[in-house]
Image 1 (tube, rainbow, N blue to C red):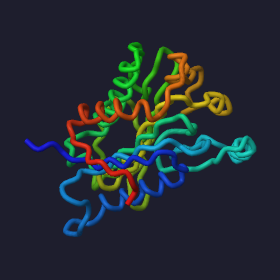
Image 2 (image 1 turned 120 degrees about the vertical axis):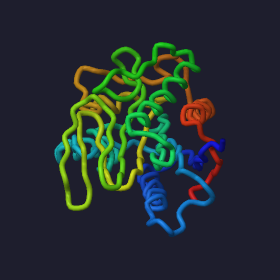
Image 3 (image 1 turned 90 degrees about the vertical axis):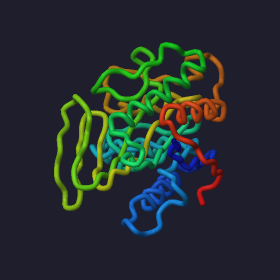
Image 4 (image 1 turned 180 degrees about the vertical axis):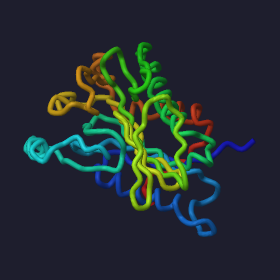
Length: 265
């Protein structure tokens, strides 16, 4: 039986705005009307990997940053951007692996919660291969990967779905109808519904300067901390070091074949 094919787009260091622009182009390719040309061959989507070129704070569908906070963060030398993902405010910057799978969940036979669990499993596997066997995905309503009370990997998604919402979760979800789409918002994760397409993904702290997180309440989680592979292992762990084991874990978890592409074309 043929495994689904996913295009791997490895981008090295990249401004966050360029990653979002590339993600939107892949979303449009997956969202074209039936009967028109979409992806080449039988690809089910793309896996976009990069390391942010500079510090950027992002807010999700539920906001998370006031105008005053935005001004304060910009004064630190960081970019501030609103995004279409779920959740509240978080930080992205150098030393962090950003993984944005742009996937049609129907074609992969996945539900949203299964997709979230698969991303968490990939990050847990990378931590284990680095010798951090205490890495765990916490029970709902939390998402991401944790070492005790310290978050090492954040997950936030944007999902498009045609017609109706399929959300497999025991958490309470608040839904609201807009003119053309259904949005579902909860404490940590937001879902934008239109055509079964999911984007955004995970951010794994490799050698991230954790002081940037001190200026916000990451993902709105009070009383928890953040950490990185470098912090836990007490050595410098680069993004390039963790990409090969991450790709191996992704293929095993998603039962797919990654088709390499080193440019955004």
